[in-house]
Image 1 (cartoon, one colour):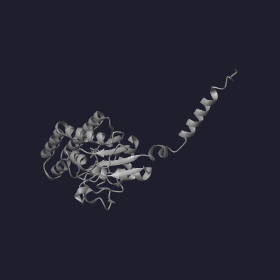
Image 2 (cartoon, rainbow, N blue to C red):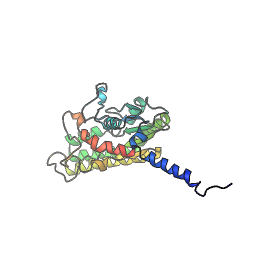
Image 3 (cartoon, one colour):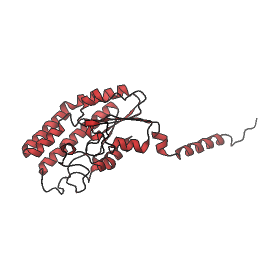
Amino acid sequence: MYTSRWAWIVPSFLAVIATVVGLAQPASAATTAGERYVALGDSYSSGVGAGSYLSDSGSCQRSSKAYPSLWAAANAPASFSFTACSGATTGTVKNSQLSPLTSSTTLVSVTAGGNDIGFADVMQTCVLQSEATCVNAVNNAVAQVNNTLPAGLTSLYGAIRSRAPQAHVVVLGYPRFYQLNGGCIAGLSETERAAINRGGDALNGMLAKQAANAGFTYSSVVDEFTGHEICSGNAWLHSVTVPVSNSYHPTATGHSGGYLPAFRSAA
């Protein structure tokens, strides 16, 4: 039986056309419409400092301008659960925020670790006490990063994976707080600012390591905030302010211009 020498090309050509047509569809519709997204974490995920807090969030201060809310609004996932809460540690995230996670969860974001090492206490020490005391407080926090934080992260990440075995989990880091040799003429010394940045880098390094160990994706926000640190003249972070709880947290612009792009690129 005679077969045209072009017969094998036709199905292949049609397959290519189908592929091209598929690729021409909007990426967001193809990749996010079916997402079941759960946002976990501490104040850097809940949106403390961004304002516009959701009425049902109470002291957790979940904001409609926080990066999880912004991502959900832009991508219309099939479901969105926002349980991040101000003051959360790895332990409280594990114990009180994981109930929305299921085997059908497809996407998870989380920030946790800063409260485990007493970040707020360190910053209070640096603002109120001597340079030497500040540097010592940072050094103690770095010791906790290396010695005690790994166990908390391992436990939390393991619980997330157990409850959401199919999910793509994105661990986000923390900004570097100060632009050194910047425009600040008062407040902390350069030595204190450098020490605080060093402590943040140590924390982010541990988050990246533990995320990799868990098979999660780590997304740094340091690049996004570069040029927008405190003392930069165009800060996306609150310095010491009123209410005090906003201090050293991202502004609404810090979420839309910093955290959201970092999460979006990883998600």
